[in-house]
Each structure stands twice: as C-alpha cells, then as structure tokens.
Length: 361
Ligand code: TRP
Image 1 (cartoon, rainbow, N blue to C red):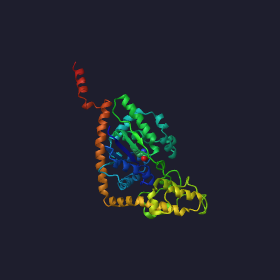
Image 2: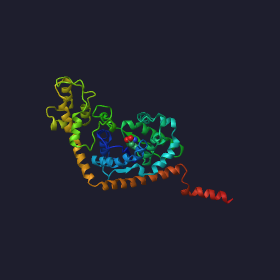
Image 3: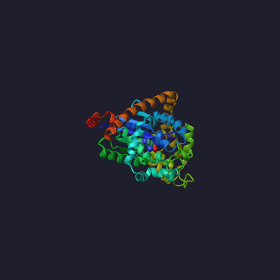
Image 4: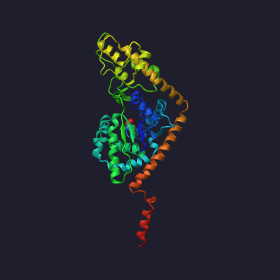
C-alpha cells in the first residue's frame, strides 16, 4: 500500500518554535525522505472557524502567514500539496455522512474536545460545529486516504476517533476507507516545547512564543528574559536543570557542533548541565549560548520567508493549485464513499434498469 501523509494546522496565528520542533521540522524530513507517494499539508481554516466563527477576519489574515511559514521551513510545493481546507467542499459532505457513525456521548468523551470546551468556557453552550470538529477531522484524513498523520500528542484522540469511524464505515458499507496512523515526534522534548515563561505550552494568548518570523532582536530579547531556575540567584549557587526552560530548549535544539561554534569551553550538553548543577555557571551565559543556537536555526528560515514575501500573489497561486489538486483526490474518494453508501443513483445503471423493469409490468 502506498504511504500518504495528511496533516495541517489551524490558521489562528503565525507558527512558532513549538510548531517547528513539534511538527514542521519533521514534515520536511518526511517530505525529503522520498518514502511517501503523496504529502498533503492543509491549512485548516474551516476547523479554525468552529471556534472563531465570529472573527473570520483573523482566520483570513493568518492563511498567508501559515503558508509563508510552511514554505520558509522548507515544505516544497513541488513535492507537497499545500491547500486550504474550506476550498474542498467535498470535505463537508464526508463530515455529514460520518456524523451518522458517531454518538454524541462518544464526542463528549473525546479528551481533546473536553479540554477545549473547558478552555473556552463553552459548557452548556457548545456550538454544534465545534462539537463535531473531530468528525470533520476524520473527513480531512480519510478523504485523501492518508495512512500517516504526523501530529502532536494532543491530537491522538482525533486519530483514534478517525480510526473508529473508518472501521465502522468499512464494516457497515464496504471496505472503502483507510485506517490512518499517527506519527508522533521522536524526541520527547519536542512533543511539547514550553513557553519562554516556563508555562507548559507556547501559546499566542500567553504571549510566551518565539515566532519563526521574529526578528533577531525580538528573539534575543525573548531568550534573555526566559524563565530559568528561581533558586539560582547568585552565579555560584547550584542550579536546577529540571523545569529550567533554557535547558529544555537546549535539549530540543542543541547539538555537539554548537559547542565548537559557540561555547568551546564545553564538549557537550552533559558537561554544561553538570557545571550548572554544581554552581558557578550564570544564566546569562547559557541564555547567550541558546540565543546563538536559535538564531542559527531560524536565520535561513527567515531568509527564505523574505524571498516568498516578495511575491505574495505567487504564494496564493501555490495554495490555489494545491487546493485544486487536493479537491481532485477528495472528489475521487467521495465517489467511492457514495457508491459504498448506495447514494450514487445516477451512475448506477443496473439500479435504474431494475426500476425500469419493475414499473413496466
Ligand atoms: N486539529 C489540528 C490542530 O489543531 C489541525 C487539523 C485539522 C489536522 N485537520 C487535521 C491535523 C487533519 C491533522 C490531520 O492543529
């Protein structure tokens, strides 16, 4: 069976370092591995509208931001199909039919939906569209017969829900859909990069993100004011690594070569951690080191973004072509789904014949 990747992001803001280590970097590696027959990367605007329906302007503004971030990290539109969810009307059709296969109780039990309902204080006023977004996500995945869905850990319940829908569909109608598998980040630090303030997650509303498109000076300021170890007051004090954001970031980004380049007194991260724990190593020094590393990682990304920013209409053309391509694939699968569900009346000539005969008598 050929391997197909589908994944995506909600266009609610520019992408940040958390997205980068948690998913974008991996996508580019997967794209360049040559192992996948198709790679589809979706800007999930319709999903973003399920909890931003009253602010469509925000979603509209961020489509180009996400597209620029995708292109700047190295997603190549000649290899990967970059598209916009709302431009594939077939997806809503899948969603409507899949709704029959999922109970309201099952949606209530979805841990991701549960957490989001709490976060947004929806309680008894949950919009039906939002409540059903896991079903729409199953549509996104199955429409392209994706085998592989690279996502963060928080998306596992979505993939599980999709797998259930696929099994139910295939058993009730006929073997039509593919059961996808999640592909998680390899490195546990990359599963969830904390915010610069040490909070569990980078989030725009907390203002603790380093964006891929930040200027070198913005990045430097954010790193220099990062949360470290509140007990490490004097340079000579022993420091703690656990819960120390600078070290968490170093775990995610630092390679031995960075010591040679930026901090030759140490050979590797273990030595640096050891010195910090012992005492005598100041926060400014480790922050400066981290700053060098992050700058060197983001510099080529920013340069590539600048190139694409020069021709925004070409970026829209990429998204348009990608959406047309994605639509062709989804329409093909939808035909198969409708055939399996016996709602393909007009192309079913034997069915029409049968009724013709029946009413001849
Ligand atoms: N739910 C994902 C997010 O919040 C976005 C998304 C929508 C997605 N449809 C998808 C991810 C299908 C993977 C597969 O980031």
